[in-house]
Length: 317
Ligand code: NAD
Image (cartoon, rainbow, N blue to C red; front, side):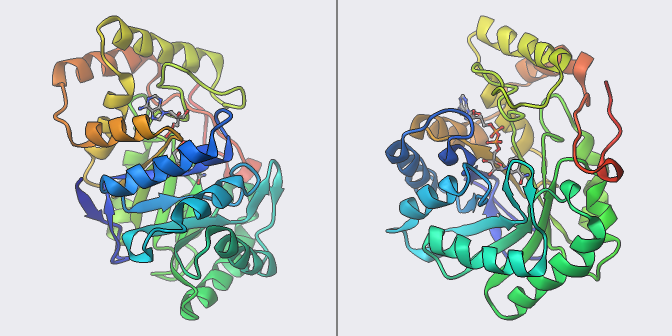
């Protein structure tokens, strides 16, 4: 495994990291024991950064992750969770709620300290509230030593500068972007110089585009429009026809970018996390990679957006 610094946090994170949303049964019914084994396999093979949220599986992912971490030394991993999103359409970014939320997450996870606490999907929030209430509440928790660092997450890219430009340096230490840097979409690249100039650590999530670039394909809730799903399918089918695993290319493409500290991949399968970790450090088959990028060109940077109208990115249809 290779490691990169996460902005100025002082955390040296594995270039491939573990996203625990599948432990909440977000993609399919999962077996908790297998999920726990997946976490242990990830840690044993060098992953040291774990991401979760109370939202995933309505607290189930945090609970299962907590069971997995029960017997693991606390200095073996950096733990990130989130505040503000608690169910489909259920958001509360108030200071009181996010402060209580930290205690609830710690209880489920069986820890008393969170390395990185992130405001979860701020496109659904009133950004004035995030700037004036949520982030100040997290700064208080950081000053009190309850958390190590503060981050924000979101799908539309515009929400990141919209918040970072309005708070003092060092308030937001990381961003978590998803589905905007993967084989079919490189829009996140445009913001990397902005983050880099401010020493903000970049976490890229969903290298397979939340299942878009997998054999199983997307879950029913996936927001991609049909043309995008069909476009991705062509690349998946091509890889199968030549005996290649598209997930290998998907992982390699993301971890190769030096401006991205870490890429979060989700799975509840020990076999798949093993594969993904091997993929992250294997040499790229350049010809195959180029062929797949060419196949995905017709849907390059096509996207979906969401959140409050003022927080949405323009759509490339
Ligand atoms: P992902 O792109 O990592 O895809 C997960 C899907 O790919 C699952 O269906 C999984 O079974 C499948 N998969 C993984 N490895 C595979 C393999 N080797 N072969 C076949 N299929 C494989 O998407 P994700 O899980 O949504 O994202 C990763 C993590 O990033 C999440 O678990 C979460 O922690 C984080 N995330 C955060 C946000 C946010 O904060 N807003 C949004 C998206 C993701």
